Image 1 (cartoon, rainbow over the protein chains, first blue to last red):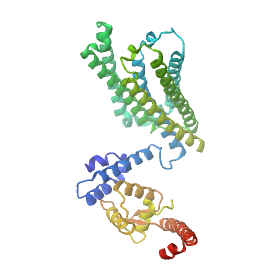
Image 2 (image 1 turned 45 degrees about the vertical axis):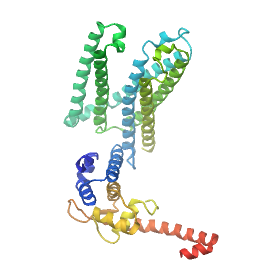
Image 3 (image 1 turned 120 degrees about the vertical axis):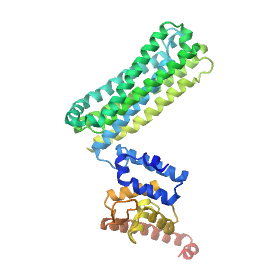
Length: 296
Length: 108
């Protein structure tokens, strides 16, 4: 139990204080850690993780900006997972509308699509801005430090790609209702592939964070990353609001059969909550990034 | 440093003012003089922060029971914090005496 708790701390902290903290835990609890001490240690580990990421305490401005920008990147990954849920749910929604191709839900959906394009472009711009530093880092012998992350993400990508291709071939021979839930085996595999895709997004994000934490970025690049982070969060906020408006308008005027009963569709609810959580986390990261950039 | 008397850094510096101690001894001493129990994560979070700021330092070899001692900068920081706390205590006592003389007299 104590070993598990200690693993929650960042490695450098664990190397410095781990043995002492373990001794304290053993001495104060007689080998059986109480839930209260366990929670206290877990909270302490979380604080140290935030500090190590430049998101708490009083880190140098550059680290604050880097940590904030990387938090926005993680938030974007979470947002994408939620957004894919909304996208899947919204397939063919226009057919459930009585008034053709105009009105509030259509405008809100356009904002959603536009926000996705703008947000993606800004994230790609952030990655491109960091590319020269990444190449320098790899040239100077950094590859072994990030190899496990990049290899894991690549393997997951290959598996997800194979899964999507297999699913597409399978779907080709099925009817519409079979593709949408009446074939239990297909549905189960589709859920597995969706989970694989989500794992793929998260693995590439983890790889990007592992690289981003080690890059030597100039003040100019960090300032640019902070600005891009603000733009990404603005896009996320617009998309979350647009999703809520689209959902509300759809619930009011769409054919009830589209929701299959209640307008509070669990899949849509979970996806929207993920998007909201990602937007709030991203806002925290963007604030840190801007504070760091202004202080530099 | 903050001026709240129950802040872990204030409690740790106060404890170390009477001599070096390791984590467990610190925890017990603080419990005895302040009546508050610092959890292991809170205690070591504060220790690492104080060491980072040069207010305490290891007093012996690295090991599972490494003692810490207060540095000169730590003594200075603690003295400043206690002076601030004293100002609040004095001010509070004076105001209380003005508002409810019997209560303040009893407290004194």
